[in-house]
Image: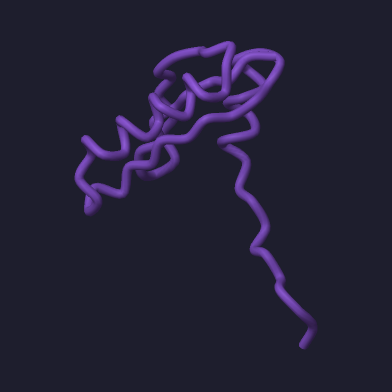
Length: 72
């Protein structure tokens, strides 16, 4: 399965960048893009492992639940 690289702009707008077969290659693309983007823009760069581009976009656009650490 390939790795998909996306730029995520507020409010959760996905922009496809590239598909890579190797994790190391996708990781380098994401790291380079993060370095070149100003931090205060709210833009994220993410890579995701999925069968196809539609699955990757669905996973990235679905809000994640807050992590609960420990018990109350």
